[in-house]
Image 1 (cartoon, rainbow, N blue to C red):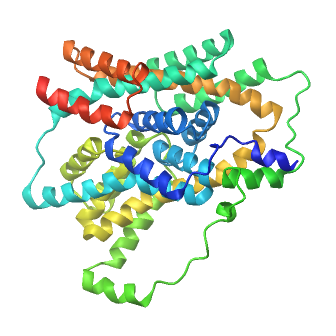
Image 2 (image 1 turned 90 degrees about the vertical axis):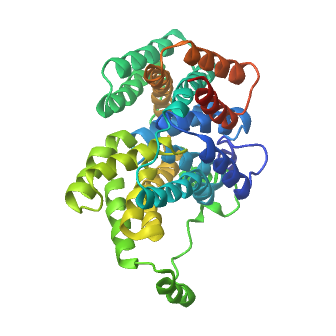
Image 3 (image 1 turned 180 degrees about the vertical axis):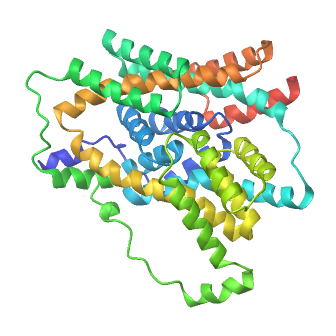
Length: 414
C-alpha cells in the first residue's frame, strides 16, 4: 500500500514554502471585495488553473470542507490548499501570505481613521470592482464545471443548488445543500458493491494527507512551544506593548472564531454584540466603519478584527485580534484535512463527494449572480463584465491584474 501515499494529487515538482507564501501574498494584495467566494475564485485560478497544484476535485472538496467548519471560509480554503501542497508549514505560509497585505493596509487606514476622522468614500472604485468580481466567480464556476460535471444527474444537482441559494440563501441552506449533494451522490453514484471501509493502511494515507504526498517531514506538526526570548520580553515595554490587552483580544476573537459558521457576513452580528455591546471597545459607528474598511481591503472581510484591535491596543492589539480570528479555524481545517484524506478513499465517500462537487459549483455560480446584482446596472458594468470574461477565458490573463484594472476603469468611467 505504500504507493497509496503518492496518489494524492500534488504538483509534479516540489513547491517551496517561499513560492507558496509569495503566491498567496500576491493574491492577498489584489483580491478586493466580493465576499469569500471572490477570494476563493482567485485561489482556484492560481492553485488549479495556473500552478496546477491541485485538481479541480480537490479544490471542490476543500471548499465543501471549509463551508461546514467554523471560521472564515476563504482563509480555511487557503489553509487547505497550503496543507495539500506542503503540509502544516505550507498552510502557515499560505495563510500568512493571504492575510498580511490586508492586515498592513488595515493598520495604516486605522491609524488615519482614528487620528484624522472618517475615510473618504471609494464608491467609484467598487463600481468597477463588482462586475469584474462577478465575472471572476462566473469563470471559476465554468472552469470547475467543464472538468467535474459529467452527466445529467450532476447538472440537476448543480442547478438545484444554484436555485436554492438564490431563492432562499443563508447559512443553513448552504449546509443543507452540501448535505443534500452528499446524500444524492450516495444514492446516484455509489457502486453496487461499495464498501465504506477505509484503506488497508490508514497510517500511510494519513501521512500523505498531512504532507501533500511527500516524505519531507512537513507533516510532523509544529515544534513544541518555546518560552519567549528574554530580549523580546525586555523590548515589549520599550515598544509600548500592552500584553494584557493583547492577550484579552486574542482570547476573545479566538473564542468567537471557533463558534462562527457561514462566512464573514454571518459573523458580523455576533462580533458586534461582543465588541460593541459587551466590551465597549468601539462605538457602533466605529464598528460599522471598520466593517466598511474590511470590505474595501483585499483579502478576507474579517480583517476588520485588526481595526478593532488597533483601537484597543494599537499595533499589538491589531495583531492579536487578527491572529485570534484566523488561527484557530485554520488549525481545525488542517486537522480535518488530514482526516478527510483518510476517509475519502472509501467508495461510499467517493460517491458522496461526486454529489457534493456539482452542488458547490452551483453555489459558486449563484455567488456570481449575487455579486452581479449589487453592481450598477448600466453599459459600463456590462462592458467591464464582458472584458473580464474575455481576459480570463480567451487570453488567460492573471486574475491579480484584473481587479485593480477594473477599479481604475470604474474610477474613470463613473
